[in-house]
Length: 78
Image (cartoon, rainbow, N blue to C red; front, side, top):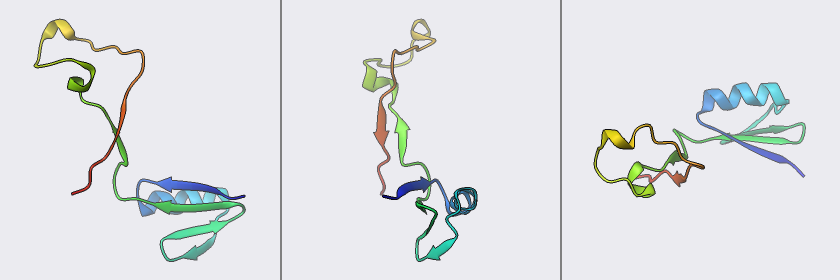
């Protein structure tokens, strides 16, 4: 079984691949030593906006916003 690693950009993927020993280069990924390393362009997920937690508009009384957990939202690509 191989472990897949997705990096934010190609330069980071190359660095990670070197660290884990994934030296064989293919089109769009590198592999070796039980790892497959590929990349995306930019962040794949982001933190949810305050409105998704029930906060509407700006109010200083809401600050700081401290939540028990954060919602992650997949990035929408146009």
